[in-house]
Figure (cartoon, rainbow, N blue to C red):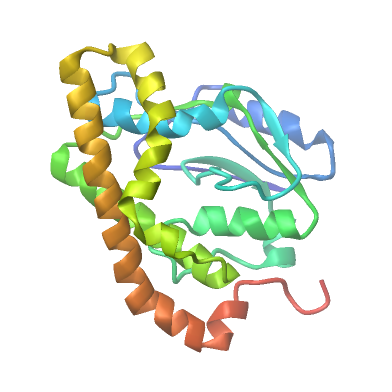
Length: 229
């Protein structure tokens, strides 16, 4: 009835499945997920956690699409019936198909839960090149969601606009890892570079897969709701 997802570099706690299952007493809840936390983060993991872990400050039940839902298949569960009702993962996504799927679940009238207590340990350790590659791939998924939903804005391709949202992440990073000159310079240098990499990823995918996706009506609907739902 419920399918749980994790990754080969994640270690769930012993009661991980029970923690997920407790959210499904409400039939309106279709999915649940939690953070993936590196137990001994280096600079790149700490930088990334400052950006994304803010989504899991408190337990939150989401009943509408609000931005980036951030339920990832490294730590997510979903009612199996959802795949019959809204379709499977869209395989044209090189990354981000989980976010696209959750958006379709939400549009079908279901709710989902973000719960910090559903934490798994994520053993991924990035270096400089691998982290930039990771951010490039993440951007591929975000732009394809915009293409599918016809919400793509030119702002997505202007790094300085996106960079302006990073000050809150810096405050979170500084609280946990120090706010000295070296940390500040490293954080903002990496933030500037990753924003540029993300714009490059969006532009690349928009010109290649995104353009074909817009021209192919089958691709736009094959992962959507089944006829009769």
